[in-house]
Length: 338
Image (tube, rainbow, N blue to C red; front, side, top):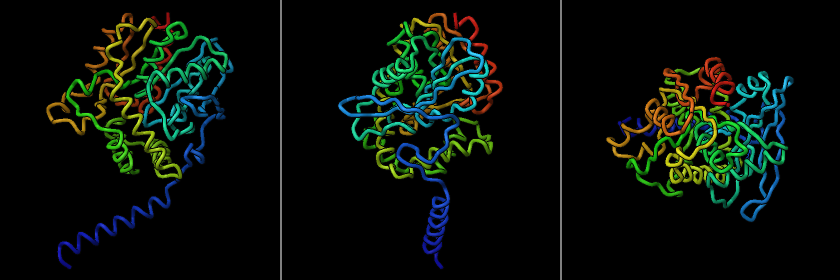
């Protein structure tokens, strides 16, 4: 067997192995049907952009209520279910928690056509909270959800009791830094290449600093099962539209306008920078330095409080839940919550 025949045989073998792996891996419905959420899922039905849509959420009460409500906003590669540990710890501390799947994500509607803006998602979130009788809320967002939480606080300062962001995207403007624009179609093509292995490798590098724990597998399987499930085309298209929203709608220029108490929780090992993979090397190497970005944001947001986790990555709430939640609960009760 010559070299090319050997290579072909290896590729065929790899394809067969991957095919068996995919056959064994769970596949979920377009709205993540088949994946178990940790608490009962409810739905908020409303009209948006000329169509009927539905937002899934979990509204979890505390047995020892302190009168405060925390709304949890997920990142692009996450779902409301990913907040499971945070929900348990916050409710144990007296908080009512509403964890939301945004339109286009997870258990919520994946529209065939939708103009994704942080303004629209913030308005959707406000409408859902109002439907639950919430008029004051601590808005807590992670990753993309940090950008959304910031937009929410800017749009609805009277409703926002406190803004909390965990390794938020948008602490820098990647386009202004020199990252080339990618069209929605280009993003879609990239999303369709997503595999279990690519999801895990990305999380291993950016979320957990090369240290993997078995409990992380559940979240890889969640994302992979949604990407490869019955709604694959619509799921990947909506993800591409979300990527365009993240890249083209920076919030960094409005940090000085934030009028609410703000708490920043930053994992210092994070190097997440959307688009860095298509940027020139000299641009890519200077992006995503969260220790510097977090400190710069804290200076720009008047009266904000910065808590740093130097040894943690993009998802400190998952990577080191005890350390993270101890800091979060203190931050919720501390000077930032005045």
